[in-house]
Image (cartoon, rainbow, N blue to C red; front, side):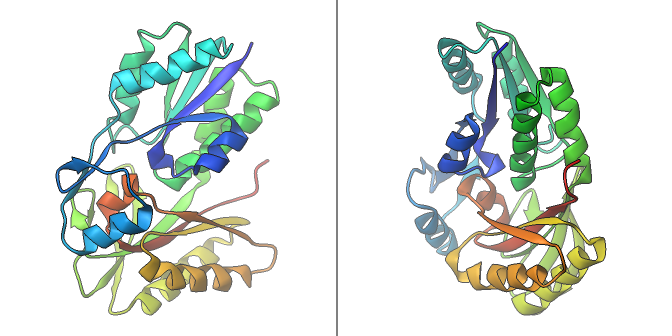
Length: 263
């Protein structure tokens, strides 16, 4: 049995990472100034900083159905579609609607994580499938990994909605099933980065991923990553906050996910 993997762009998987994993990524529609946005990441954040209004919406069932039909045409006998927590977004519901019309069986998984946490779970799902796990066994493994994930991020001038913060203060927050939860507030990005580093080191994770939105905050993410690399045995990778997530966090955001070594 050949199981195809599908996710959505809020997972922050890059095209190269998706191609390497063999994952079909369905785009989360993003608008900027009332029009669909298809430009560069940097231009997106420049326009946001200028005050242009941005929105996101869940992919249509038709977009997911196209992905499921591509999987069937490529020879897959079923699809596992992995997405963020349905308590945060309706993406998984849209995929579920499409699954009812797909030419092959589709199992939709809504995991208790968001953003790059979904990418981590997609990688775990690919490894499980490669090891011979069934789709349902793979969902169980991806859910187990999601349950081990920690996260924290700093934001300033977020547009509201799922993430709320305002200039000039930097709000350190974390995502859980209820959405963004406040942790602490700081006058500078440097103080926020130091606070996040303390939180992450307290959990002593083996694997860490640090991400950033606009280029203006990349240096703060660099500092956080380098500081965390000083921990013995730790591994740090980097990711970029794409417009599908940055539309909610704003341009001035950086943060991290962490988790233990996979068993």
